[in-house]
Amino acid sequence: MKAAISSAPNSASTSIKMNRWLIVLGTIIVQMGLGTIYTWSLFNQPLSDRFGWDVSSVAITFSITSFALAFATLFAGRLQERWGLQRLIRVAGIVLGLGLVLSSQVTSLTLLYILAGFVVGFADGTAYITSLSNLIKWFPERKGLISGISVGAFGTGSLLFKYVNSALIGAVGPAQAFMYWGIIVLVLVVAGSFLIREAIVREQAPVSKTEGAKQEEVIRHQYTVKEMLRTKEAYMLFVIFFTACMSGLYLIGIVKDIGVQLAGLDVATAANAVAMVAIFNTAGRIILGALSDKVGRMKVIAGALLVTAAAVMTLSLVPLTYGVFFACVAAVAFCFGGNITVFPAIVADYFGLKNQSKNYGVIYQGFGIGALAGSFISALLGGFHLTFIVIAILCAVSLLLALMITPPGQNRRTRQHEGQMSLKPSSRAS
Image 1 (spheres, rainbow, N blue to C red):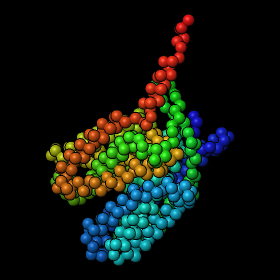
Image 2 (tube, rainbow, N blue to C red; image 1 turned 90 degrees about the vertical axis):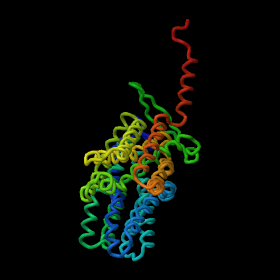
Image 3 (cartoon, rainbow, N blue to C red; image 1 turned 180 degrees about the vertical axis):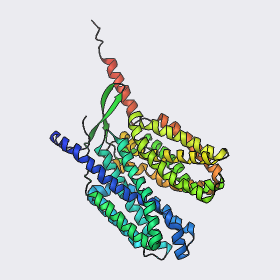
């Protein structure tokens, strides 16, 4: 198989194959450090108690972090071109760590929003998308699996640091916990960056396409952002990704409240759903990412959207028992993890690997908008039930799009190929 990761001579191919697993290790370390920001909810109540701030006001910090993370992906590709990947990840790791360390000294919500919100989110998003996109370039034949490993490491960092940060808050309080958290993250991201090497993609990269038992090599055009935005497929993918992110992020953010208000669970039992969401979210990233390499990425996305729609309709319309509640929450978390894992590979399949960071950065804005849209729609409609119905309708629309969409130019190439075949003289002609 021809590799689309480097313009180096063929004699270097063995070295590339050996070294790229070190790049996987470095990316895992980086992503685990970056994923720790999803432990923010642990700090809401302690900061509220320490400074007398309203809990909801403190919680806004993470909304700012999520928005800044998505916003940073628009600029990360350009920064990578100027600074190089290793240097960019190191700088992002240092800024991320210092943002958390300096947050230990804040005494106002405004400074908390700036440092723990915007600065931390922007640095995190910069390192996240560039390290993820680079790793996919090193494994063009296993995009789904590799994306699952990288994004799964991000989720694992969140899961592990729930215990680390809980212990730190209990031992030294929320302010000092920020300092130790920042130092640990800085060390993880900077250390991981030393194992990462930047992949170089040829202008016309070969992509393997399998049809039955026949292996056909297709030359995929390397789209720039401007070229991508001229295709209808870019907007279709954005709608699908927005729907997947909104449904997952909204439910994850209110899972404990659903358990208490809709399923009638006590607070302690409903809180168990938070840990379960993290576990199923991480499992979905790895399992559905690997599955997408075998059965097709849009089939996986379509299946995940169908399951999500069924789960949210059940939450909205069916009387919830303990088992039904946890089954629905687990299903949505699993599908959400899979969706955000498979999408980087889809963007690479559709628009090429060369400009992956920039192209995926545009599509990734669906994450930032989706993070805000669920809460906005819920506030507008006045509760869970109608919001779940809206999400189910959006999932149905996106499911249709997922079943219809094909890579840009594929139909045209197929017609050209059929036309050329029809012009060939028959082997039986006399």
